[in-house]
Image (cartoon, rainbow, N blue to C red):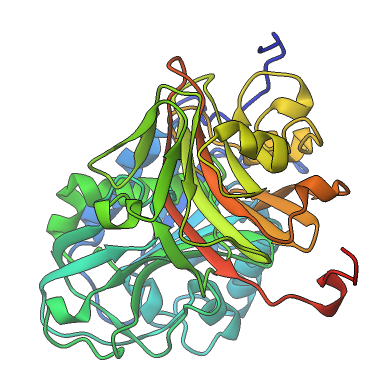
Length: 452
C-alpha cells in the first residue's frame, strides 16, 4: 500500500530567455546557470558547417529553456564572464584558440562545476594544453573520406543516446583519435570499423563519450562535420541530450564502464537465460527494452548465481509505478521466495522512505537529498548500479551513491544468490534494458568462516 508522501524529482525547465555575449553580467556572487556559450573560433581548418551548428545549438537551447550566446571572440574567456554560463560549447574549433589567461578561465569554469560540450573538431584544438587534452578526452589524428558508417550505441540510458537504435547508421566524417579514451571516459557510442573504410583504431573506436573532469561535466561527440548533420533529427536530439546533461538538466552515469558482460539486451536469445516466476510477464519493445505486464511476478536470471559483483541496468517508470530489482535469493519459481530470502532495491515514487526508489525495501531508505538530485523524472531513463561485496550492498543512481546497506540476516545472505526484476501488478508499468554485470574478486575478509 502506498502512502501519500510524494518525493521530489529533478525537473528541467527554466524560462526562455534571449541575450548575447555583450549582455550585462549578473552581480558578484550570482550565477544564472541558464546560459550556454558556443565558441567556434578556428586557427586551423574552417568547417563550412559551423553556422549551421551554431544555429542548431541555439534552437536546441531554446527548447530546453536556455539562453545560448555564440562568439568567436576569445576575449570572453574571463573568470567573471564564464561564471554566467552553465556550459561552454566548443563547436568545431581548431588550433590554438585561447591564450594562457583564457585557458585558466576555462579551467576555473570546469573546476567550479561548469559543463563543457565538444563537437567534432573540438578534438582538433589546443594540442599543447594538457588540461584540455584530458577535458576533451582524445585528440584528432586523421580521418578517411566522408561516408556512411554504423554507430554502435553502448549506453542506452544517457539522454544523448537513449532515443537511438542499437545500430545507428549515418553519414559523417569519422575521426580517428591519437589515443583510445575508453579507460578514462564513459563511452556512449563507438564506430563499427567493419561498416566503413579507413578506420584505424583496431576495432575499438569510441566516437561519443561523457565524463566528469575535476568537478565539471564533459560531453564530446565526433559527429557534426557535415551541414546535413544539423538537419538530422536524431543527431539534433543527440546534441540536445549532451547539452541537457552538461547543464545538469538531466542525470546519467558517466563513470568509465569496463569489464561488464550483457545479461539482457532485449533479444530472444538473451531472454532464454531468464525464467518468469509467478503471474504476469515482460513485453519486449522495439528499443531493446522489456516492460512489466501484470503480476506480481519476477523475471530472474536462472543460468547462474552470483557472489561479489557490480550489476548495472537501466529503468524507466511512466509515473508513480512500482517495481524493483531483487538480489541474493535462491532459485525458485515462487516470486515470494525472493521476497522472503533476498533483498529488493525498490522503484516506487511514493511510499514511506524505506519503500521508495533507491531503498533496500523494508530495511534501509536511500539518502533522500542525494537520490532526489540524481533522479530523472517519469518518462526518462535512469541507471542503477548495485554493488555486492560480501554482505555489503551499495547502490548508485545515475552515478551518485544513494544507499549503503549491510545484511546481518543469515537467511538473506548476499554472498551467493540470483538476481531478478519484478513485475509488480497490472497498474504498474516499468521498463528495463541493458542489464549487465561485472563479477568482482572476493576479498579474504569476505570469505565465510568455518561453520557459516
